[in-house]
Image (cartoon, rainbow, N blue to C red; front, side, top):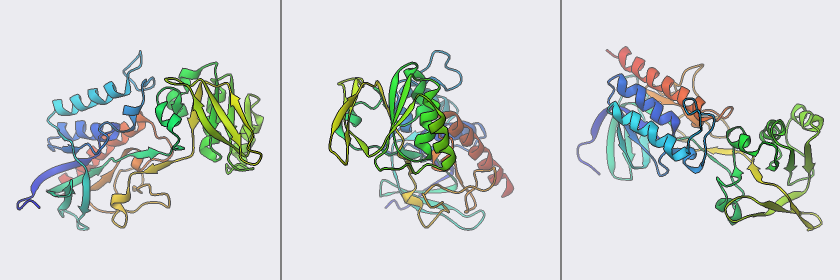
Length: 315
């Protein structure tokens, strides 16, 4: 361990749209933020080939370029962006207290404020063909990528409200949507199931799982299997949307910060304040409703403003 911990005003944990936007605002407020990227610099958007719905890019933008642009903007105002993983936290429970953080197991940092923007990770099926084709027709976000499948046939994997919402969204864009449900019933609410049933171009296949996604560089079809009869068939689709949930990246904060039953951090009212003074949360780590780059960026701005106001209240 380092003998003399570095002391900073504002530490940002995570480097997605929320983290970098927080850094831009914090740096402009002279908070001299230090941002640790985590093991996936840029977050989920770096797995997206084309981002078509982020303001300011009329022709769309590659996900990696968007995140590189946000990083450059944050650094332009003085943010220190460092590659590293926060491995332990010791947050103060007192207003004005100093929060202690360990990076990569041995670097000690003391921070007057901490902004948590560690995001969430989409759950995938775990089959090799799925992983190979992420960004080539496999997606975990219909509202992000659905536009690219306009007039085409797609499948949605999942049985809950998220799957039903994604399917009905896609039904307005795509020629047809097939929902693959592993069991013989959907877990979605009655209202969402009713919406699915009312939509003529949505088909639901029960007791059905993906056996393999076909194609080398882009999705060319999906081989599905009935888990009762073991019969297989190939669906002629160009897009596969996985809607089996997200896991917020909050294991580090269990027992420290308040979170809901699924692990999302709880913030107070319309703010980004957590249950501990001087610790704020923004982006997908505390938002399970919208999960969009632009909404994450908005809460990143809020977290920086909340951090600035908190520090001002100590003077």
